[in-house]
Image (tube, rainbow, N blue to C red; front, top):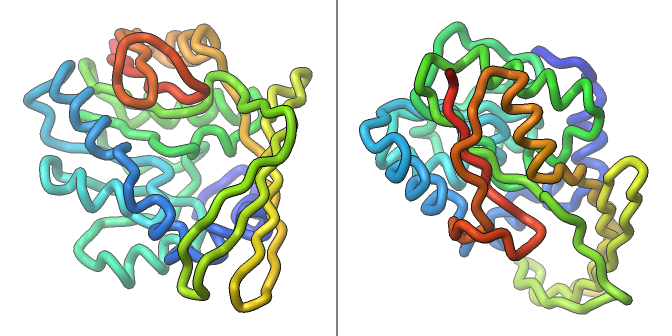
Amino acid sequence: MSGLDSAQPRRLEASNLFYRDPALYDRVQSDSDSASTCRALVDRHYSDARTLLDLGCGTGRDLELLTQYFDCIGVELQPGLVDYARATRPGLDIRLGDMRSVRLGHTADVLACLGNSLAYVHDNQDIQAVFRTFAAHAHPGTLLVLCCPVAPIERDGPHEAQVETDEGTAHVTISYQWDLRIQINTMHRHWVFDSGGEVWDVVRRRVLGPRELELYATLAGFDVIEIADETGAAALTGPGAYAVARFR
């Protein structure tokens, strides 16, 4: 695995329960429409695209759906997620690599970075490195479909949720903190399982405003052609967004 910080996979796994339990991650995200939104955006802007590179592909859930329409390769930083993806989705081509520095030696028609993959890259220099990776795998006309937080989630107090797991129902208490200076939105979760077990985890995500996304993309050689909300609609109404850009 190439990377700027070899400790990052361990930090992500230690801090986020989903990365320690990929099966739970898949279960909770089973109703995600990221893949269908990505495909719709590609159909809108590059209908004859044939190849797709998914950077930060996680468990391969979205990649499995996208491979029905494109010749796909996935890249993921965390060895545990790669092992899980290869075991549960053996037909996928998933490589271990760091999207800040990986170089596959070829380009793709579509570059996808979905979920919160970019949000786990916190430093400005590292974000620029990711966009250099995008450019290194792009040819003129390559479409970049990028999903990330563009505004923080802020709540007056904790809220409750229930998650079905292999251990039964988990009762989850969730709270958020927002650090404007470094633009990090921190989510604290307390999991209480029917079995009696408890888990605390902390998820830190970098928020990039729409104009910041435009700047990083432009500096890397991409022209932003659309920024849509999480449903693919043109108006931004929530904390997450899809940015679509074309390589010059």
